[in-house]
Image (cartoon, rainbow over all chains, first blue to last red; front, side):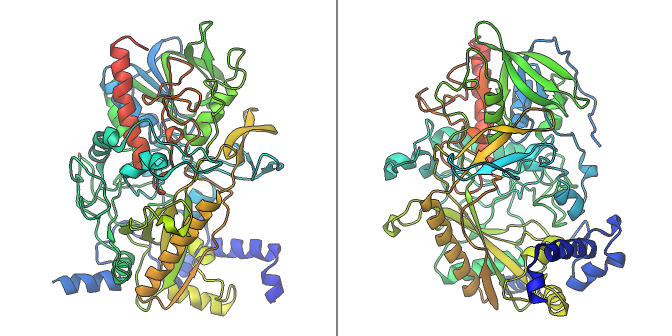
Length: 63
Length: 553
């Protein structure tokens, strides 16, 4: 299996699987955003800071 | 697919004041400035004219299908490392192919060049085997136009935040964008190392500006068009303002194959293929080529004639030569808590501490460092995973689930030396979809460029470690075979034997032919050339306007 993972055919197959799993659901894959939910990605148009833990901490320290 | 709004239309036989070829970073600035100055302008753009409402976050369609960039199927290129090698068909350049050009999909880093970039050869001395040279203009000549670019297009940043910043006549029009977790960690790591991190200057508006709404932090900047119109590309700024003059027509889907001359050797216009493949000749009193550092020299080489058998405006033999890509390196790190880097703009903190690497290391070069995360879900699943992690199966899946939101990178952006062998030329056999000779790219980084890139990459790793990364790794640093900063191929200079255009962007050989884009650069800067290209375009507009008003074109 390890050797197979390095083959060109496997790389192509992996590519298709990942595009299907993590691509925009509008294209037919990633049903119910299952791939996005797995990694914690959301596709929204608008976010407000703080965005993550470290910038939230930095804001707190400044306050 | 393409929307051409209501605008002034010109006939092919109308002898317009200016024909601009390419409507991207520089061409649309020239179109807006010259039309505002009272001239009639036709701007030919090979790509479509998209509306921001047509932009999406669809990673596969936008990036894999080249919606915003040149298409390697229709416009194949060949690549070789040196002129002695056989060129092989492969994608060798990426550029924006649409109204607005590469600035529609760029990351929006908006860095001025520093004073040293213009005078480095005389300060540091010649480098054997290279075309390293001073510019015919200085930073002081360009400064008013950097300011103009920042204010006319809309840039966010903090003047004086970097001790290495060159002098400026005005602050940024807008305050910096909110810092992201990658910026906070970069700042912490860099400060521990005694460096001077500062808020990244970006061509994204942090507040409402000139009728445009501010960035909504959707996270899709690099590689994508901005649906909000908050990225300060010419598409929501220069382009509508040019059209609003009533003197400018932007003609998308117009693929130019030749600049035509009259019997006296003056440009009379350009021949192009329209969307349906029909050939037309648009007449003009003067021609400005702004087609980027790869297509501008290619068009000149395609425009050879009895008068110019080696390519138009190529008496120096330097059209296409001295191609510079800049270098890019990537170091990555994972952290304990969530960064959620998929939100907001890519880069919020940078450093210019290594703008000039200490010459005692024995090589020329320098660069900038930027905190960022350039991944989206599909690309992360390929590029965001360290080689030591499992690459398939349930452990791989667990890795992605844990680390998509805990990963950041520090990129190094560095110098490329101008080498005569590194070039854009015409391929001997391969043709594009229009039957024209395909672009051939010859490129091999100078050993000093590689050394400088490795040095920057080492500093990037140090910053990640100082910031407390749990794990760090980097992409291998080596010779490049794909360029997206396309610089130096029709360089400016005072001597017609060693340059293609003068300091006013006029070609030395044809009085009514001007070139203005990445090809004009003499040195590569430190990896973020767009603001300089646009500052040059604002300056060129003033110079060309003055000539035209005096009747000297």
